[in-house]
Image (cartoon, rainbow, N blue to C red; front, side, top):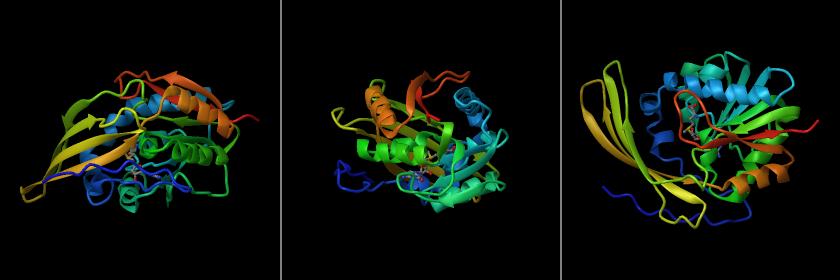
Length: 262
Ligand SMILES: C[S@@+](CC[C@H](N)C(=O)[O-])C[C@H]1O[C@@H](n2cnc3c(N)ncnc32)[C@H](O)[C@@H]1O
């Protein structure tokens, strides 16, 4: 079983093709065993505090772009009304089991236009699927268009260029008769470009005790602090970088906040 070297995405006139990996397509029903909702409590609390600190009154509506399995949403929905958008219908189906009361929509964060505004916009780790600066700008533009004046948008990339390092981790969970374990390997074949790789090996145990092995590769984007702040400013936000600090630590060194001027 081998995984081929991905092409560096070619910058074209339009958004570049995203490779969501098996994790967010065929293997989406395993998502909550790889990344269970209860592990998001502390981070979701941190994100909410940052969003709230940037708004004149606590947000009552929030749009999450790239909401995936809805793990953050399962906590944020206790604070306000949430609309969830993801490219993958199969990930949205996972989120619907967790968040049946939330509005779920299929769409691309770079192009979707809902024709309405929200008090706040949030893009968590899904922003790491933006492979080029042009696509990052498109996603931030989408957040700007859907954010009401006086509101705020929060972006939480897994890494910034300055802090990206090779690393490995493992984990996985059981539920009923099913279980999964994974090994995750982050590495960067070319630190001179705006992408890096996340390779996975999965062991997937079904309800009959049969275990199968899958490999997966995600190509993700990474940008410097200066790129982030520059794009936020160009789109029209008042930008700032906020240190990522909550009780359970976390991947990213910082998150990026954009206040939309009144
Ligand atoms: C790691 S998952 C997000 C998990 C999420 N933070 C949670 O709380 O469950 C990343 C998601 O980004 C989505 N995604 C990738 N590119 C996207 C795009 N251009 N527009 C919308 N969603 C996208 C994938 O389909 C995937 O569901």
